[in-house]
Image (cartoon, rainbow, N blue to C red):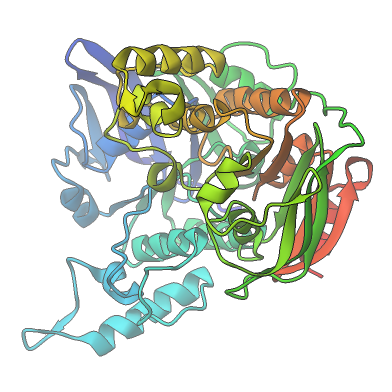
Length: 497
């Protein structure tokens, strides 16, 4: 591991930020040295993103001072920060779908020749950037339709085309599987050896232990603790983040009955994403689906939910053929999907929590086809309380943390009392405290007799919540493991078979 420099390249002193009467950062200090990775940790709402946005020029601090390479530093815009050598990779994907990969990587700073965009040079440099991150895609391909993981890697490659001396990575592996994550870590090690400083934000604490040199913990907008090593028990880190003892992250496994609720026979994608998938899920069982990114996991649950076309196969519910032709078919039969991308597919961001919950439950809030505002309010408040959503019904979804947005997505569907719940990456980009409460919700569903399917790129998660795990490799079902025989090695052997 490269030794960081003794003089910080970035210093923050007494940084505070207020929005009206609400102070979201309280006198935060932070140093980052060349050639080191500083993990910035905390629950959703702790102030990590606000602090990162101040360093990257997207937000102005209310008070405090910063220095960059020994000189006063106060970027008024992201462009000023980029020009100074500070780059940030946002958690949310910002690519333009109707542009090519190369155009996205150089948008706003296209290479030119004699006043014209030099597309040959742009493609050459884009290919270099993609090769550095190990992504084998042609630069001329449109971004539209690419998997979330590929888009995240393109965002990373885009940032690395800058001659950055500091990179801020906000949940860079949230959409990545194990192989892609390790590729990113190799790239980070190379950048460290070149003297680049890195601020790394992630809720995946095992990867923090692997990649970080130091840990700085924020809680409620304050810097509450610093660890001069990342080689710590996960429990120690979690308790610093949440300010309380965390005895157990995962609840006990449920005890399913012998009654089969869902049976999938010979399921094959019409688009070639997977073929001949066969499994059952029992009443009160949590059934995990694991595999590398791109293996076909998401496509399987989307097919079961009627969102993707089925080429062949049958889906049985309580012994009856309910193979859906549309999401509406699946919903009417009691099969619901909590999708991977909550912001694009799960909630209407500029609408209230009440409205978001009502959209999936009109039969419960409408009288003879007319929506009752009182029923919307009462129905939403009941489910906000039931699922522990931290927010008021009139609050817009875009004003909430990622964990609470995910609870709204879960609440709006579970209010229908479904028979089968499909959860695709249920804790992606969510802090440990919120993850724990979502695991409790999943466990509660199973205890109530619901058949639950969980797709996750987080191997620790899928091992921790599942009674059984089905492993997918390149669209093929390679095995189903009982919890007692499932571990990191057995799952990865099947995932790479």
